[in-house]
Picture 1 (cartoon, rainbow, N blue to C red):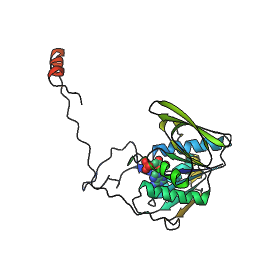
Picture 2: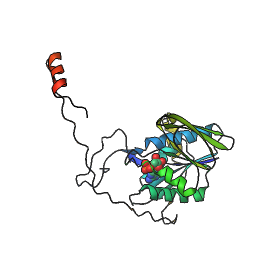
Picture 3: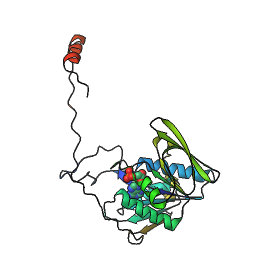
Picture 4: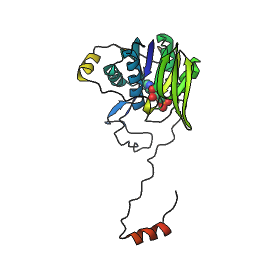
Length: 249
Ligand code: AMP
């Protein structure tokens, strides 16, 4: 079984995101970038399936600027076998990402795509679903458990009312939720080994896809600042303020 894992380069989750002064987006210059955390979970799941002898190959794909190769290297250090960089300077929207991934799927013919449920930079939460639709494949989103059995996958999904378990024939698209697994850290020997693993570079033109954006971002602004707190001198003062000033928001 071959597994394709899309991995996105995003602002590291420990970094406080800053809006660019001209309001056109989020500042990425000089900011630490990392693999999208949900994609780390996807890589971990794919690597575990390989370690169990269920998967034979794990291919990591990243789409974006040349620096996305670093994100692929991280996936390779975590246990993926090889990488594909679809290099473009265009700001990619989920539909463009899904079209590019669908073209990569056409070339690679994986049995399973495991993507993140959302990228933490723009929180689109759309790529996996669009990819499944473009391919005409079944999809299971927000997976918190994944079992490969009987020629298909059984996925437990986190839904509002609890957990839903669905069975899908392969090939299929699955997107990861936080509780699917706890990703490992890359060891130094594996980081060194990853340097020798191959990364192919393609362009959207090689894949016959026009990645031009269809949406225009009008503006990006910071969330409103929280007001500073105040210390009260006594319980009586606190109770009085709760009575007269506290509001339900
Ligand atoms: P999104 O729909 O943008 O929130 O992203 C959902 C998932 O799609 C991510 O967790 C990745 O697995 C994948 N994805 C989105 N954009 C990219 C990209 N530029 N390169 C690789 N994978 C991506």
